[in-house]
Image 1: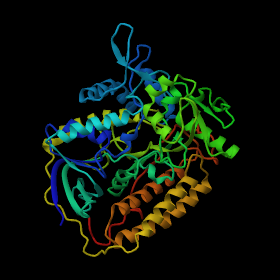
Image 2 (image 1 turned 60 degrees about the vertical axis):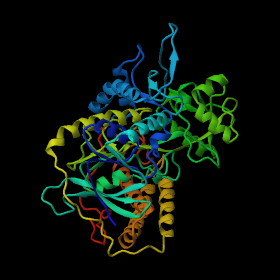
Image 3 (image 1 turned 180 degrees about the horizontal axis):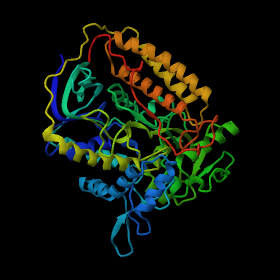
Image 4 (image 1 turned 90 degrees about the vertical axis):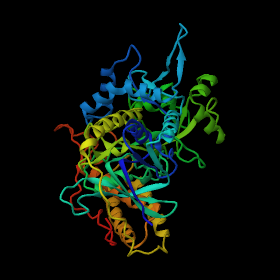
Length: 546
């Protein structure tokens, strides 16, 4: 039987952004925190690098801003970049106050300060980290705080199906009223009503065959926001991390950019370096350049991978700074203190998402988006390393302030309609879901990857249209499952990525297309903005449910 829940704030997603926001708001509000699996299972847990923030006396906020703008290839929102850079110190201090333990180094006078590393695109050492497991340290620390807070109700193994809006209910005033959420353990869809709803669901890396993302990264928030009427921007800009461990038994294990920041060299199988042929910054070029260079060399030589070598550094230094990578590689008989690491690019980060302002507001009143789900304009056409965790924490604070300022004027919704399953049945063909999932991820990798062409994109679009018809027919006739919800969201996100890529008739940042290999300098750089309007990807269920 369906249950009706009422909270002040509904937060869908439990990564750094969702947890930070919950803690910022919990003192004066009742919070519902929705997590698809265990509370910690998301991209934040696996983030290795760190948080970029100016701490060195030779560095400056202006330098951090300019580095970010340069990496973004002309598409960053300068005001958004300036905002997060100037809020970075406060964000780090807040995390430390929550108990996050960052790596420190001893000074000559006996005092200590944060150890700063350098990553691609940064002109200075400004990446604060917790060894090579910064995301894990942040996620587990915030999780502990959240679990202890009496005003935060945690719903693990729950997955949001769709947002409930005034428009869907036929009300005169359209705003977000909450969401229908599937309890994946009891197979019941419940109603969560809230004054304010926040999408903090992360990215959509699982739309690709090879990704550094965990299985939860299926673009749920972006798809739900689009179906509710929100615009999306810059969905074509998919960051492929240059260095993912290449091994037949390794599942998408990322090799942090900090290894290159500490002197790691990219090598061909014969031991020769190659990055200098592509960029004067060599291994420290931004991720899009490094990923394309690796992709080029792999295709040119017909090789399965390239190699990342840090073995020239002292073994003690490597074990101290990269303990997680060292231990994981040893599991696959690779001793990084003595031999190079085989690496390949993999889908890593989505720079686009639901359009928001600098307070996290979307086009739909009552609905916010934060973290990788949101398009704030910070990243432009290419995210600079270690700006993403920073964005999560900084914008969580911005959302908290805006939500709190509206709290008194926003009433709790009344009783909302239950999920209607009166005209659907249990599926006897669930193999269709797994087959469609596999087909989608394979053609996205083949046709919408690091290097694109118009013909490849058109092929992908045609296949997406066919898959969409199949999936929506299935969705309208059978009871929903978590796998079906994710597949429905992924095919929508894939369509948005392809449509955006076809609209950008130039190469810029992460979007490289052979038909237009140069940037279009005849006009100012522009965002690719899509509006929902009438779309075949968002029909209502045949059951008549909202």
